[in-house]
Amino acid sequence: MTLIDRRRLLGAALGLAAGTTAYPSSSAAAPMTYEEAARAARAPLRTAPRERELVRCATLAANSHNTQPWIFTTAANKITITPDLARRCPAVDPDDHHLFVSLGCAAENLVLGASGLGLRANPLVNGDSIAIDLETAAPVQSALIDAITARQSTRAKFDGRPVTTDTLRLLESACREEGVSAIILTDRTRIANVVDYVLQGNSAQMRDKAFMDELVSWMRFSDADAVATMDGLFSRASGNPALPARIARPLLRLFFTESSENSKYRGQIESSAGIAVLVTDTDDKAHWIAAGRACQRFGLQATALGLKYAFVNQPVEVAALRTQFASFLGIGGRRPDIVMRFGAGPDLPKSLRRPPEQVMRER
Image (cartoon, rainbow, N blue to C red; front, side, top):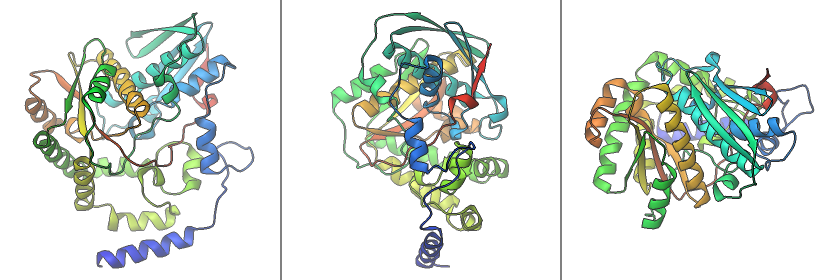
């Protein structure tokens, strides 16, 4: 089948899916469209109910495969974040590194959101949990807080334009966290090296059946699928058309190939203004959480500056490649944790989040 034939087939399938705009929500409430669900999740932060709003703010954080692998336990002036191990991804994340980075991202959103509501949030990592004590303080306004509801990982080509030195300085400054370093690459030769590592990692993952099965299990092909679960990787949020699952799944093997994905990643990275790599001094959960906090601030700062960003973590996800990537970066025995590309790019549909009631527990 030629590329033109495949596009015609995809267009015909898309035509079959057109015309449907409202689907049942994940609750028993009235039908909800994808856009309505996204707006509800990303509404401006309100002052009450306080704990629910802080949890909603936290859930808007970046997280692996949009699995939302967190549980929030609320008590008097305290919120504790713990992992939801039922949502771990053992194929792509066998040591739960990305899971704990995701918890750190959520903690950073909660800390920033609390400051906007007139609360000082004091996070303490204790083993697998993050305990966040809340105390009254003067409300704070900042561009990062304003960016919480707008931030997203944008899996699309950027416009290729460089960013200013001042912008790079702000992005690097946003990543400052104890035990975490940020490496910003803008040299095109160095970026081309990163492309090679990403493509090697992507090829290794796409040849791994367990990885592919896990990835596909988190894909949401249609608006209806996405709204029913309020999680996962939604087609339109990645710049792809939405199709009913019964049509999309058989087509997936035709379009979602090692060659096509490598070509896509090459184009996306080459269109970016730069690459940011977060590195931790120590390879443990506390530092993974710290990397998550720095990662979240990077995304919020990029958003506040009118930039887009996306994760290209293949070089740190494939264990055999991670050591080589660390050598390329010149970081010695430290672990490269997160790889992100950034630049100016288009808006895409925002991914969904489960409502706070589904992730909250009371003590």
